[in-house]
Image (cartoon, rainbow, N blue to C red; front, side):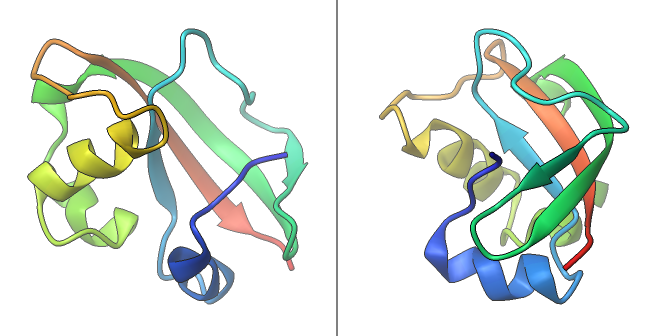
Length: 98
């Protein structure tokens, strides 16, 4: 299962949000696989690990966040982790299937 914050679920379902950054020890999803979300399913198109400092401005709109700092905050939110430029994040690109 791939979880999303309640406030983001409608935007994921509408296709507005198609990228999520996750703070995982190891990938919890694989490209090409389908995952339930609790409000529909998504198919993961791509998963890659990258330092948070390399999160690009092109992902701001795709994540539904206001800026890169908000992407970092969202990634560390679940565990209360302070994300730094060196923190490794999983960039998950997906599409909502319904």
